[in-house]
Length: 386
Ligand SMILES: Cc1ncc(COP(=O)(O)O)c(C=O)c1O
Image: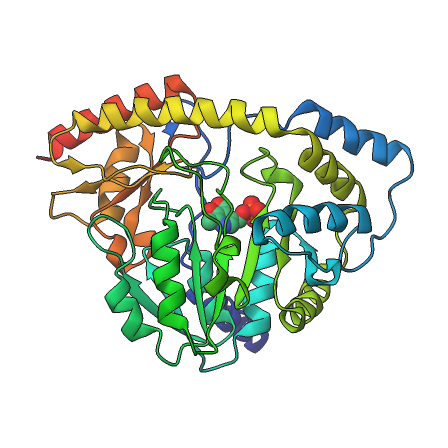
């Protein structure tokens, strides 16, 4: 672009500042001959009863502003759900309904982080965290994962000293790792006596394949009182386009997050919240059905990748991602470009942090056919690169 005026110059500087804080890359849908294993979203339709609830709400005139913290009926149902996990009675004032998980994370991180604050994140992890920390003027402290993609708890011990905040997702994106109760308790012990806040992003909590019950951070007594719990309807309920999620946490943090959320977003969509309530109350079977399908597709993808020489798939425990390491000395961005030429879209591990280099993220929230075709193309392309 040619910059022709001082105003345009200033605008270009702003664009640079904003883009420099963003590591995220827009991904393609499957189209033409391209098979996409890059998308982080269910390929299922939202359960019909949820769609119908939204239509009914709209027809009934639920088209006006909603209360700033969210609809009371939804917050009350969420209080029951959170209360069951945390084994305590929950004050609905500590719940904020948000514009998806993204809106919740944005509100929480911008509310908590002051310029110069140190914020620890695992490396690699969901790239939104580092982007938001940078936007708030905080210092991102990435702590590389172990080779098995679980936390390096000794390294965390060191990094967490003096940290304002630790942010993580469980199950993990991009790793597909599920952090166990023992790991969470060890984290709780490391933070004992400190004022470090924890954001626990449990977007994929319903999607675990370890054979054991998932442990939420809300169930860990040494962590729960310092935790901001971030949830979304996007993944469990196949509701990515509806943009609804929620936060629960210490009252003062939720109040600050509500200010940020209301400033950036205003109130939440009214009819969408009515539909979200129906999702909470009626979708257990739908969640199980979609989870079973992901479990089958996970095996299909893992078995396919296991036959590709030079790829090492560590145990895929949850979410809908595999994060194989490859043994070629080529940056992941370049591998992704070559795979794209070969007709399959995946994501470079380096997009999720420097320690994600030499990995690829593949999503199995895609059809069986897409998984089979994508893995076959990847295998051929890898063969040619060796
Ligand atoms: C770990 C994690 N948290 C939060 C989100 C955001 O989800 P939402 O669509 O609700 O904004 C995503 C989406 O990919 C995610 O992977």
